[in-house]
Length: 147
Image 1: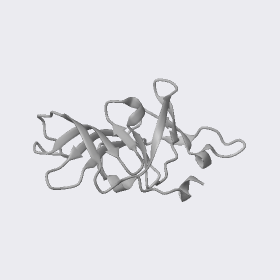
Image 2: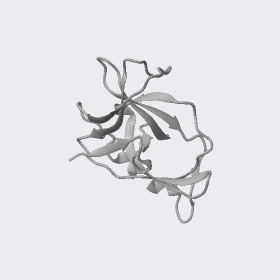
Image 3: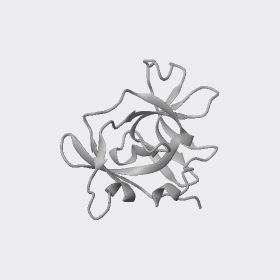
Image 4: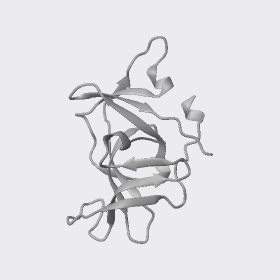
């Protein structure tokens, strides 16, 4: 069901806001790149905010679940996101159906990938994050469609 919904959450010109001052370059961004707290994908009014727990989780087009760590605006290039992927992802329930079918996943928050860079076109859905304990959480995809 969820796989048939539109995956295009981006618009040609997303809105970046609240620049974050950084002084240390990273292998994934350099000193001349600008970092931002928030990006709004106007086509679906989707907000990603690295400083708000409720606004930093997304599913990618390859169905991986990630947490957004940085929003980067490189010089003369489109914005991109620096993310960490949840390595351990399982069903919340399989009765009467798999929770995967309704977009609900259990993740181990202590098992995360290294940081890596994605394009805005890699975003499939924004997600809702519910912490269950120190190392366990539920992630539910939110249904977005183009208007």
